[in-house]
Image (cartoon, rainbow, N blue to C red):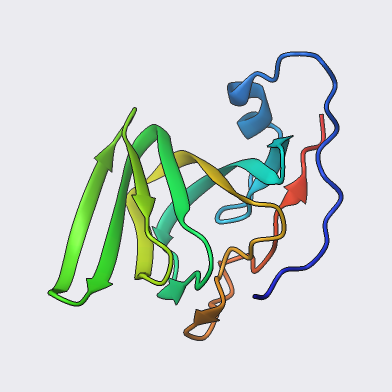
Length: 141
């Protein structure tokens, strides 16, 4: 498992406005950790264009679309398929499933993953310049 240690987001006891969290950064495909739940990060990010094909060998990946529309291409034993997630939709990519998120017109998403999970998974194609290969960045308020 490719996991780098990260400092968890502080538990402040105060509500976190997701719109403000998303407004605090401009980078695409570069998630910010808004809080932690047990050993999981709750991350928000802005996306546009294509990510890359990748696999998380040991964990599922949860997506919630806060705004816009997200596509997730999946390579499954039965073949390739695309899942389209409009605003307000959730989807979980099962561990071990090769997938590639994309958002042609841009989207804002929330991710729920074990702390230290890489945005490019455990196995992936070459990482393009526009994708931040990270385990998440601390949210700067």
